[in-house]
Length: 290
Length: 290
Image (cartoon, one colour):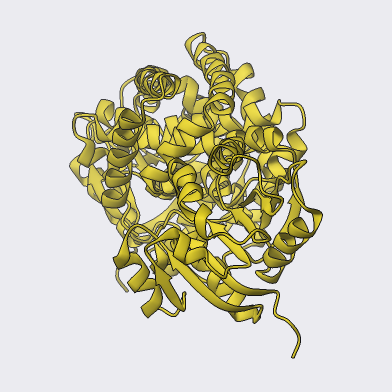
């Protein structure tokens, strides 16, 4: 019998992201045992019943005991305390990776929690998800043909990077590497800002008089546009706080562009509007060709 | 044999909206003959080949000759000239309706073109569509279970209103009535502003350095969020110009709310962000329950 890719995988936060990884790796037959850890025992019990994990611990150090790979998929605001809590039980050669939507803050948290960055630490971010959350929303195909970005550090052991890469590939993903800061900028543009805009729009409408009637006349375009506003508010609060700088930069740029559109509408400048809309349509058709 | 609901339907602008209505009414067996009119003969020839229309005229007055119902689905900026051009051929008792996304401007255009508003004129707006355009995107089910808003005027003949209502019901739609000004406000909120935001976001990203790379990492949420940015730029330019007041009101409200979010991120106020995001998620889950 050949050695499996992962002997014991410990997952912190067995929700959509962690649960789907567990299901995918199980389906691929590359993991022997999956251990869950969370502050909410009912979530772990549910994950156990669904066959997503084999067993669980509420104590982080106990949960990582014996783990050769640890995957942390908790909201960004909980990363540091999870790192701190697992430290006493962590094997020296354990590989640690995460699913956080911003990376500089996770690196900072790991440095703060571990003192020096462990060579097994490889920050990562699967560019996948749905507006649903929780383990009941998990499914093994979530990562198939999706991109996973790893942001290895100077301290990262190349063997650990290869292990994390192999894990995501086994789940069906395409794995790429990027520098931490660049990751945070790209994701602010393509994910964090759009979520803010969608949450903001729905909230603007919800606060209007007659909002019942307003939503009643929303068509398919509105549903698609606002789907991401059904995402987990805690996760997104943490992203906004922890990727603050890149999000504020990107938002300022967007606010200026929006103001330009408003001015064009005010002065009835159809040519300027047509130019913006045409350029946007061309870019969207080109890049999101469906 | 009983009289059909419509003997001759003349459609101006046989694209997604006009073409889908033609296909739906044909499928329902409620129309004898469908005549197309457009400035672009190749579009009409295509509609003829696809069996969407029975014949066509490039001259508007010839196209409406013999029509008992006329449907105008051209960009808002072309409404007035279409009304003016059809006038010489229009029967005194013809029913005229439209598919314009804003209604005050269409009413103003009709008044300007016809002198006084014809009793057969019943402004309307089907709340349906996709990001595609053109007659090749038309399909008979587009209006099924979708809302159509009619904004009858003091001058509108109740029999004409009933006729337009019956036409849309035959296409599978739910028909409601609304006051013109109110329609324009509601649609600015649920459709026009979201389109501006989506066009604006894609354009902001497209204008950034490394935009190729940025779009490469866009995930499913971004595709959904920006789908409406693939809509027809000319149609949306016209909507922004012709529903200017309501759109500027709604956009100002949104800009203030966005600025509030930015301030909360700046001061690291997670509670304020969580409140906004939670309220938005609750509203979206409630109103767009899928």
